[in-house]
Length: 164
Image 1 (cartoon, rainbow, N blue to C red):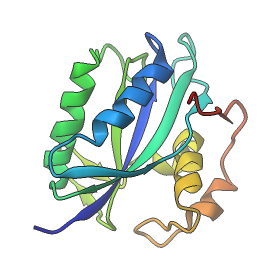
Image 2 (image 1 turned 90 degrees about the vertical axis):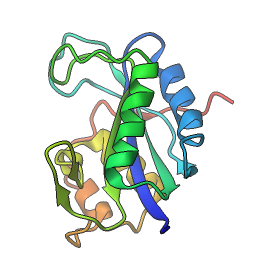
Image 3 (image 1 turned 180 degrees about the horizontal axis):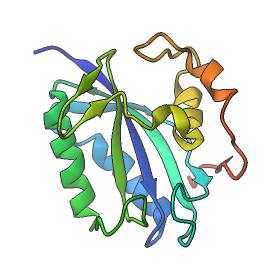
Image 4 (image 1 turned 60 degrees about the horizontal axis):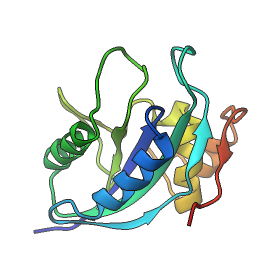
């Protein structure tokens, strides 16, 4: 069974969001057939979408997994449910959001999953933590993350110091 690299975006803005993100980072390391290879710092960011909600805490993790993209998505959604994720409105507040951003160099568009994540290139709160972990990373279309980062608005985005 082949091993794959998967990049996961994490976000939370409810019920001690930094704790949700930090716990989820630990829990990602315990997914079946998966281990966490690295994680960015946590970042604080303004809400994307409705502004009538608290700021978000975001991070990115790199996983090595033998799961398929859909099996990994199932595991991520189960982890969201363990954190009492409620999908009340699009881009609304949440206890935990886990997005499969990249899976190797795969490009796929399925009813339940699109990889690369369709919004990845528009979100500084995803690109900057990705860049922290992998400064030389290129997307499947060949575009370099470092060049993309220079085009994004980063006002309101700040890295947080580790809590430990």
